[in-house]
Image 1: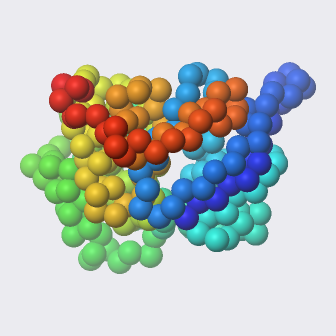
Image 2 (image 1 turned 135 degrees about the horizontal axis):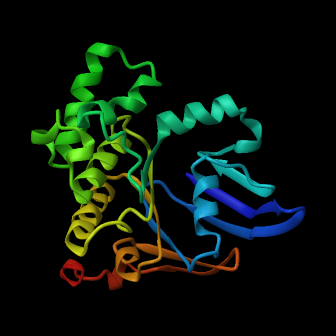
Length: 235
């Protein structure tokens, strides 16, 4: 599904170049659950932004489902992003005065989904994260854990091929964080591809594979299926 080779990203800060990514190479197969770990400044968030089409690299190559992103216009990237990708962010990115229903519906407003189908899709997505009783509650009235579950429902409403999660437990207590990780794990078990960025080892180990970043490069890339932690350690 995802294939990157010698990926680079350079930023100019006061006319001084800063290398955020220094030649990153790996691939992610459909249905994998992959964690990308690393300390602050390691390049993991920059990498996620490129993988999810929120930014473009300045060097190297990136193929998504066999197609190079260099061949895609910004409009095509936006279309693929809306149709094939779901996003979960640390800060939730919900509109606090809108209801759960209206927040989850937002991605559908940018698709060709007819209005009479949108409600059913929203209700199913909200039901999948166990918040159907909060469907018409303003997002600002929810707890942190509930807000993140709404964010996951919003990510799922377009039935994406891959879900990108950027520090999804970072603003949550341990119990809420565990619930979020169990939802992501359940998505993976149903065949969804999940790419998670985190600095927390216990969170990362819900995945089957951990890619560790350091100084803009891949430090290690290991399968950890046999060492999957017991969920109770996060309680």
